[in-house]
Amino acid sequence: MRSLFRTIDRSDLRDAVALAAAVGVVGASYGALAAAAGVPPAIAVGMSVLVLAGSSQFLVVAVVAAGGSPVAAVLGGLLLNARHLPFGLAMSAVVADRWPGRLLGAHILIDEVVAFSRARGTGRRARVAYWTSGVLLATFWLVGTIVGLLAGAAVPDPSVFGVDAAFPAALLALVLPGLRRADARRVGLTAAAVALAATPFLPPGLPVLAGLLGLLAAGRDDTAEVAR
Amino acid sequence: MNWPAVLTLAAGTYLLRLAGLVLRGRVAVPARVERYLDLGASALLVALLATAALTEAGGFAGWARPAGVAVGALAAWRRLPFVLVVVLAAATTGVLRYLGVP
Image 1 (cartoon, rainbow over the protein chains, first blue to last red):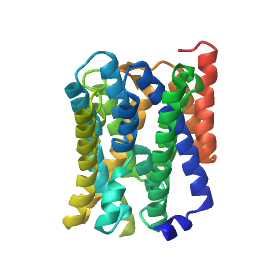
Image 2 (tube, rainbow over the protein chains, first blue to last red):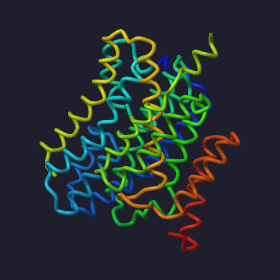
Image 3 (cartoon, each protein chain N blue to C red):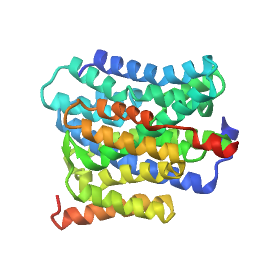
Protein backbone atom coordinates (compact mmCIF):
# COMPACT_ATOMS: atom_id res chain seq x y z
CA MET A 1 0.00 0.00 0.00
CA ARG A 2 2.83 2.38 0.84
CA SER A 3 4.32 1.85 -2.60
CA LEU A 4 0.92 2.65 -4.12
CA PHE A 5 0.90 6.09 -2.52
CA ARG A 6 4.51 6.71 -3.50
CA THR A 7 3.61 6.47 -7.19
CA ILE A 8 1.15 9.36 -7.19
CA ASP A 9 1.46 11.99 -9.88
CA ARG A 10 2.36 15.43 -8.42
CA SER A 11 -0.50 17.27 -10.14
CA ASP A 12 -2.97 14.54 -9.07
CA LEU A 13 -1.85 15.01 -5.47
CA ARG A 14 -2.26 18.80 -5.71
CA ASP A 15 -5.79 18.40 -7.13
CA ALA A 16 -6.73 15.87 -4.45
CA VAL A 17 -5.55 18.26 -1.73
CA ALA A 18 -7.62 21.09 -3.26
CA LEU A 19 -10.70 18.87 -3.28
CA ALA A 20 -10.01 17.74 0.30
CA ALA A 21 -9.56 21.35 1.47
CA ALA A 22 -13.04 22.21 0.18
CA VAL A 23 -14.36 19.09 1.91
CA GLY A 24 -12.71 20.29 5.13
CA VAL A 25 -14.54 23.64 4.93
CA VAL A 26 -17.87 21.86 4.48
CA GLY A 27 -16.94 19.50 7.33
CA ALA A 28 -16.46 22.51 9.60
CA SER A 29 -19.94 23.77 8.72
CA TYR A 30 -21.34 20.29 9.42
CA GLY A 31 -19.67 20.30 12.84
CA ALA A 32 -20.97 23.79 13.63
CA LEU A 33 -24.51 22.90 12.51
CA ALA A 34 -24.43 19.68 14.53
CA ALA A 35 -23.38 21.61 17.63
CA ALA A 36 -26.14 24.17 17.07
CA ALA A 37 -28.74 21.40 16.59
CA GLY A 38 -27.74 19.83 19.90
CA VAL A 39 -26.19 16.69 18.40
CA PRO A 40 -23.70 15.33 20.97
CA PRO A 41 -20.10 15.93 19.80
CA ALA A 42 -19.21 12.23 20.06
CA ILE A 43 -22.14 11.34 17.78
CA ALA A 44 -21.24 14.07 15.26
CA VAL A 45 -17.60 12.87 15.12
CA GLY A 46 -18.71 9.22 15.12
CA MET A 47 -20.79 9.85 12.02
CA SER A 48 -17.88 11.56 10.22
CA VAL A 49 -15.69 8.49 10.89
CA LEU A 50 -18.24 5.70 10.46
CA VAL A 51 -20.81 7.02 7.96
CA LEU A 52 -18.46 9.28 5.97
CA ALA A 53 -21.15 10.53 3.59
CA GLY A 54 -21.69 14.28 3.80
CA SER A 55 -25.18 14.72 2.43
CA SER A 56 -26.64 12.00 4.66
CA GLN A 57 -24.91 13.50 7.72
CA PHE A 58 -26.36 16.94 6.95
CA LEU A 59 -29.75 15.27 6.55
CA VAL A 60 -29.44 13.64 9.99
CA VAL A 61 -28.56 17.01 11.58
CA ALA A 62 -31.53 18.66 9.82
CA VAL A 63 -33.90 15.94 11.02
CA VAL A 64 -32.59 16.25 14.59
CA ALA A 65 -32.82 20.06 14.45
CA ALA A 66 -36.45 19.76 13.30
CA GLY A 67 -37.23 17.37 16.16
CA GLY A 68 -37.66 14.35 13.87
CA SER A 69 -37.13 10.73 14.95
CA PRO A 70 -33.80 8.86 14.59
CA VAL A 71 -35.64 6.26 12.47
CA ALA A 72 -36.61 8.94 9.94
CA ALA A 73 -33.01 10.20 9.94
CA VAL A 74 -31.60 6.70 9.32
CA LEU A 75 -34.09 5.85 6.55
CA GLY A 76 -33.56 9.22 4.85
CA GLY A 77 -29.79 8.81 5.09
CA LEU A 78 -29.85 5.29 3.63
CA LEU A 79 -32.03 6.49 0.74
CA LEU A 80 -29.47 9.23 0.03
CA ASN A 81 -26.64 6.71 0.12
CA ALA A 82 -28.29 4.10 -2.11
CA ARG A 83 -26.39 5.52 -5.11
CA HIS A 84 -23.20 4.07 -3.67
CA LEU A 85 -24.25 0.59 -4.78
CA PRO A 86 -24.19 1.36 -8.52
CA PHE A 87 -20.99 3.37 -7.91
CA GLY A 88 -19.43 0.25 -6.41
CA LEU A 89 -20.48 -1.84 -9.41
CA ALA A 90 -18.71 0.61 -11.73
CA MET A 91 -15.59 1.07 -9.58
CA SER A 92 -14.85 -2.50 -8.47
CA ALA A 93 -11.89 -3.16 -10.76
CA VAL A 94 -10.25 0.17 -9.89
CA VAL A 95 -10.63 -0.06 -6.10
CA ALA A 96 -8.92 -3.40 -5.44
CA ASP A 97 -8.39 -6.93 -6.72
CA ARG A 98 -8.65 -8.74 -3.41
CA TRP A 99 -10.62 -8.83 -0.19
CA PRO A 100 -8.64 -6.65 2.24
CA GLY A 101 -8.47 -3.85 -0.33
CA ARG A 102 -12.17 -4.11 -1.10
CA LEU A 103 -13.18 -4.10 2.57
CA LEU A 104 -11.09 -0.96 3.22
CA GLY A 105 -11.75 0.71 -0.12
CA ALA A 106 -15.53 0.40 0.25
CA HIS A 107 -15.48 2.89 3.11
CA ILE A 108 -13.96 5.67 0.98
CA LEU A 109 -16.36 5.17 -1.95
CA ILE A 110 -17.36 8.86 -1.90
CA ASP A 111 -18.99 10.76 -4.80
CA GLU A 112 -16.03 13.08 -5.29
CA VAL A 113 -13.54 10.21 -4.97
CA VAL A 114 -15.40 8.24 -7.64
CA ALA A 115 -15.39 11.25 -9.97
CA PHE A 116 -11.74 12.05 -9.19
CA SER A 117 -10.62 8.50 -9.95
CA ARG A 118 -12.77 8.09 -13.06
CA ALA A 119 -11.26 11.25 -14.54
CA ARG A 120 -7.99 9.28 -14.58
CA GLY A 121 -9.23 6.26 -16.51
CA THR A 122 -9.30 2.70 -15.23
CA GLY A 123 -5.65 1.80 -14.85
CA ARG A 124 -3.08 2.14 -12.10
CA ARG A 125 -3.21 5.94 -12.10
CA ALA A 126 -6.97 5.74 -11.40
CA ARG A 127 -6.37 3.33 -8.51
CA VAL A 128 -3.70 5.55 -6.94
CA ALA A 129 -6.02 8.56 -7.41
CA TYR A 130 -8.89 6.67 -5.76
CA TRP A 131 -6.95 5.75 -2.63
CA THR A 132 -5.12 9.07 -2.30
CA SER A 133 -8.20 11.25 -2.69
CA GLY A 134 -10.25 8.87 -0.52
CA VAL A 135 -7.82 8.96 2.41
CA LEU A 136 -7.35 12.75 2.08
CA LEU A 137 -11.09 13.47 1.88
CA ALA A 138 -11.85 11.23 4.85
CA THR A 139 -9.11 12.91 6.91
CA PHE A 140 -10.09 16.49 6.03
CA TRP A 141 -13.76 15.67 6.62
CA LEU A 142 -12.96 14.46 10.14
CA VAL A 143 -10.63 17.37 10.94
CA GLY A 144 -13.21 19.83 9.57
CA THR A 145 -15.92 18.25 11.72
CA ILE A 146 -13.83 18.60 14.89
CA VAL A 147 -12.90 22.22 14.06
CA GLY A 148 -16.58 23.01 13.44
CA LEU A 149 -17.65 21.43 16.71
CA LEU A 150 -14.99 23.32 18.67
CA ALA A 151 -15.51 26.68 16.95
CA GLY A 152 -19.30 26.33 16.91
CA ALA A 153 -21.06 29.57 16.06
CA ALA A 154 -17.70 31.19 15.22
CA VAL A 155 -17.68 29.19 11.94
CA PRO A 156 -19.16 31.41 9.23
CA ASP A 157 -21.83 29.98 6.93
CA PRO A 158 -19.73 28.39 4.12
CA SER A 159 -22.18 29.73 1.53
CA VAL A 160 -20.48 33.12 2.15
CA PHE A 161 -17.39 31.67 0.44
CA GLY A 162 -19.45 30.03 -2.30
CA VAL A 163 -18.29 26.55 -1.30
CA ASP A 164 -21.68 25.20 -2.38
CA ALA A 165 -20.71 26.15 -5.97
CA ALA A 166 -17.26 24.58 -5.66
CA PHE A 167 -18.53 20.99 -5.44
CA PRO A 168 -20.80 20.89 -8.50
CA ALA A 169 -18.08 22.76 -10.43
CA ALA A 170 -15.43 20.25 -9.29
CA LEU A 171 -17.65 17.29 -10.26
CA LEU A 172 -18.32 18.92 -13.62
CA ALA A 173 -14.60 19.41 -14.29
CA LEU A 174 -14.03 15.75 -13.39
CA VAL A 175 -16.79 14.26 -15.57
CA LEU A 176 -16.23 16.59 -18.53
CA PRO A 177 -13.50 14.49 -20.23
CA GLY A 178 -15.73 11.41 -20.06
CA LEU A 179 -18.56 13.31 -21.73
CA ARG A 180 -16.55 13.55 -24.94
CA ARG A 181 -18.04 10.12 -25.71
CA ALA A 182 -21.33 10.70 -27.53
CA ASP A 183 -23.21 7.96 -25.67
CA ALA A 184 -22.02 9.24 -22.26
CA ARG A 185 -23.10 12.76 -23.26
CA ARG A 186 -26.60 11.56 -24.22
CA VAL A 187 -26.89 9.58 -20.96
CA GLY A 188 -25.55 12.47 -18.84
CA LEU A 189 -27.84 15.14 -20.29
CA THR A 190 -30.89 12.89 -19.92
CA ALA A 191 -29.87 12.00 -16.36
CA ALA A 192 -29.55 15.67 -15.43
CA ALA A 193 -32.94 16.50 -16.98
CA VAL A 194 -34.69 13.60 -15.20
CA ALA A 195 -33.08 14.37 -11.83
CA LEU A 196 -33.92 18.09 -12.03
CA ALA A 197 -37.51 17.39 -13.09
CA ALA A 198 -37.94 14.92 -10.21
CA THR A 199 -36.38 17.11 -7.50
CA PRO A 200 -39.54 19.04 -6.47
CA PHE A 201 -41.54 15.81 -6.12
CA LEU A 202 -39.25 13.16 -4.59
CA PRO A 203 -37.42 12.95 -1.24
CA PRO A 204 -33.65 13.70 -1.28
CA GLY A 205 -31.64 10.91 -2.90
CA LEU A 206 -34.33 9.58 -5.23
CA PRO A 207 -33.95 12.28 -7.92
CA VAL A 208 -30.27 11.37 -8.37
CA LEU A 209 -31.14 7.66 -8.54
CA ALA A 210 -33.86 8.52 -11.07
CA GLY A 211 -30.99 9.91 -13.15
CA LEU A 212 -30.17 6.27 -13.97
CA LEU A 213 -33.14 6.51 -16.38
CA GLY A 214 -30.66 8.43 -18.51
CA LEU A 215 -29.32 4.99 -19.49
CA LEU A 216 -32.39 4.70 -21.74
CA ALA A 217 -30.66 7.26 -23.97
CA ALA A 218 -27.47 5.17 -24.22
CA GLY A 219 -28.30 3.98 -27.73
CA ARG A 220 -25.59 2.32 -29.77
CA ASP A 221 -22.08 1.80 -28.48
CA ASP A 222 -20.28 4.55 -30.38
CA THR A 223 -16.85 3.65 -28.99
CA ALA A 224 -17.19 0.07 -30.22
CA GLU A 225 -18.15 1.37 -33.66
CA VAL A 226 -14.98 3.43 -33.76
CA ALA A 227 -12.87 0.54 -32.49
CA ARG A 228 -14.19 -1.69 -35.24
CA MET B 1 -29.92 10.91 17.40
CA ASN B 2 -28.50 8.00 19.40
CA TRP B 3 -25.72 5.46 18.92
CA PRO B 4 -27.94 2.60 17.64
CA ALA B 5 -29.22 4.95 14.93
CA VAL B 6 -25.69 6.11 14.01
CA LEU B 7 -24.42 2.53 13.85
CA THR B 8 -27.40 1.43 11.73
CA LEU B 9 -26.81 4.27 9.26
CA ALA B 10 -23.07 3.55 9.24
CA ALA B 11 -23.52 -0.21 8.70
CA GLY B 12 -26.19 0.30 6.03
CA THR B 13 -24.06 2.83 4.15
CA TYR B 14 -20.97 0.63 4.34
CA LEU B 15 -22.89 -2.41 3.06
CA LEU B 16 -24.33 -0.40 0.15
CA ARG B 17 -20.77 0.62 -0.74
CA LEU B 18 -19.32 -2.86 -0.34
CA ALA B 19 -22.19 -4.63 -2.14
CA GLY B 20 -21.42 -3.05 -5.50
CA LEU B 21 -17.68 -3.73 -5.22
CA VAL B 22 -18.18 -7.37 -4.23
CA LEU B 23 -21.04 -8.22 -6.60
CA ARG B 24 -19.01 -7.04 -9.55
CA GLY B 25 -16.00 -9.05 -8.44
CA ARG B 26 -18.02 -12.27 -8.19
CA VAL B 27 -19.94 -12.28 -11.44
CA ALA B 28 -18.48 -12.34 -14.92
CA VAL B 29 -20.20 -9.43 -16.68
CA PRO B 30 -20.72 -9.34 -20.46
CA ALA B 31 -19.20 -6.30 -22.21
CA ARG B 32 -22.66 -4.88 -22.96
CA VAL B 33 -23.60 -4.85 -19.27
CA GLU B 34 -20.18 -3.49 -18.37
CA ARG B 35 -20.81 -0.52 -20.65
CA TYR B 36 -24.11 0.17 -18.89
CA LEU B 37 -22.49 -0.01 -15.42
CA ASP B 38 -19.89 2.48 -16.60
CA LEU B 39 -22.47 4.80 -18.16
CA GLY B 40 -24.59 4.42 -15.01
CA ALA B 41 -21.82 5.95 -12.89
CA SER B 42 -21.62 8.87 -15.34
CA ALA B 43 -25.41 9.27 -15.18
CA LEU B 44 -25.36 9.41 -11.36
CA LEU B 45 -22.47 11.89 -11.24
CA VAL B 46 -24.08 14.24 -13.77
CA ALA B 47 -27.46 13.98 -12.00
CA LEU B 48 -25.68 14.72 -8.72
CA LEU B 49 -23.84 17.79 -10.00
CA ALA B 50 -26.92 19.13 -11.83
CA THR B 51 -29.11 18.92 -8.73
CA ALA B 52 -26.31 20.29 -6.52
CA ALA B 53 -25.76 23.21 -8.91
CA LEU B 54 -29.38 24.22 -9.34
CA THR B 55 -31.52 23.02 -6.44
CA GLU B 56 -31.74 23.45 -2.69
CA ALA B 57 -34.33 21.76 -0.47
CA GLY B 58 -36.46 20.73 -3.46
CA GLY B 59 -36.55 24.21 -5.05
CA PHE B 60 -34.35 26.56 -7.08
CA ALA B 61 -31.03 27.36 -5.37
CA GLY B 62 -30.96 31.01 -6.47
CA TRP B 63 -28.73 32.58 -9.14
CA ALA B 64 -25.42 32.99 -7.30
CA ARG B 65 -24.60 29.26 -7.14
CA PRO B 66 -25.42 28.30 -10.76
CA ALA B 67 -23.50 31.39 -11.94
CA GLY B 68 -20.44 30.22 -10.00
CA VAL B 69 -20.78 26.70 -11.39
CA ALA B 70 -21.09 28.16 -14.91
CA VAL B 71 -17.82 30.08 -14.45
CA GLY B 72 -16.22 26.88 -13.15
CA ALA B 73 -17.59 24.99 -16.17
CA LEU B 74 -16.10 27.57 -18.52
CA ALA B 75 -12.75 27.28 -16.73
CA ALA B 76 -12.87 23.48 -16.98
CA TRP B 77 -13.80 23.66 -20.66
CA ARG B 78 -10.83 25.99 -21.26
CA ARG B 79 -8.74 23.32 -19.51
CA LEU B 80 -7.65 25.56 -16.65
CA PRO B 81 -6.09 23.68 -13.70
CA PHE B 82 -8.58 21.88 -11.46
CA VAL B 83 -7.64 24.03 -8.44
CA LEU B 84 -8.54 27.18 -10.41
CA VAL B 85 -11.88 25.68 -11.49
CA VAL B 86 -12.82 25.11 -7.86
CA VAL B 87 -11.56 28.50 -6.64
CA LEU B 88 -13.13 30.50 -9.52
CA ALA B 89 -16.53 28.83 -8.99
CA ALA B 90 -16.51 29.50 -5.25
CA ALA B 91 -15.20 33.07 -5.63
CA THR B 92 -17.83 33.98 -8.25
CA THR B 93 -20.66 32.72 -6.05
CA GLY B 94 -19.16 34.35 -2.95
CA VAL B 95 -18.78 37.75 -4.67
CA LEU B 96 -22.31 37.60 -6.13
CA ARG B 97 -23.72 36.84 -2.67
CA TYR B 98 -21.68 39.71 -1.21
CA LEU B 99 -23.32 41.95 -3.82
CA GLY B 100 -26.74 40.77 -2.70
CA VAL B 101 -27.56 38.16 -5.38
CA PRO B 102 -29.47 35.32 -3.67
